[in-house]
Image 1 (cartoon, each protein chain N blue to C red):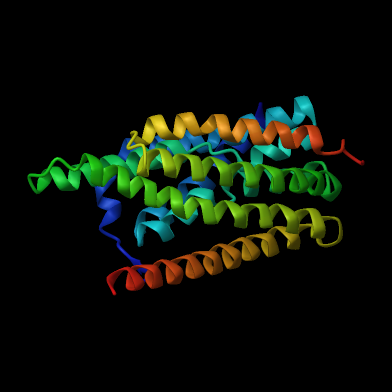
Image 2 (image 1 turned 180 degrees about the horizontal axis):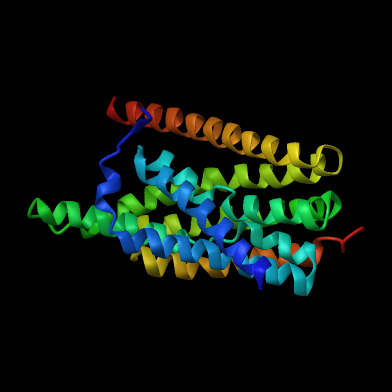
Amino acid sequence: MIRLKWSALKQNHWYEYAVRFALGGAATMATGAIAKAYGPVTGGLFLAFPAIFAASATLVESHEKRRKRDKGLQGRMRGRQAAALDAAGATLGSIALAGFGAIIWWLAPALVWWSLLLALVGWSAIAFCLWWLWFRQRGRARLRANF
Amino acid sequence: MGEYLLRFLIGGAAVSAFAVLGDIFRPKSFAGLFSAAPTIALATLSLALAKQGPGYAAIEGRSMIVGGLALWLYSVAACQLMARWRLSALLSTSLALLAWFALAFLGRMLLPEAGG
């Protein structure tokens, strides 16, 4: 089930936080520049650009590899599996992200700032429900495979 | 220049906050949800609402639906490249960008212009 693992924060080096901050900041700056140059229709596409996805997946892979190496194992395959699971979660989150955009499109003209809060609540709800359904389905499939 | 610096700081803070959530949550598949969190969108749409108004933000939101679907295709491609083709995370996520750009630009051609 869902749990918090605070010790995971200790695995990160300071420069990994700095890289993510810089990439996130640069992507937001670039999105603003694209919207200014080509208008909001093109700019809006880049609100869902996978700017830090590569950095995150590489971090997940390298942390998992490091953990396995500490136990005397190679860990290359395990690292890729962990990164693939992270990407599987992102497939569900991205559907919720499209929902976030739809809520803004629908509610921003009437509710202005409240639309942003409602869209965030909507993203969280859609993402959680999709993950829960996926997790249950996966559990049932595993159970069936064992019988 | 000041506006770009503000964008950089807000975007960097939003991305970092969601990345930390992705670090501490388990299982990994749940943590992965935060890789597709609306980080850049929160920063950009806040500034759009403040400066250009709700109409402009709504148009960006409409395009974001297409962007979200492109991100879905990107995530599926990256996941398959790592799980089935056993490619490294960096190579998989880089190759999957082709899928994002292909769907995003196809969507751009189908989207009506602002106000359309």
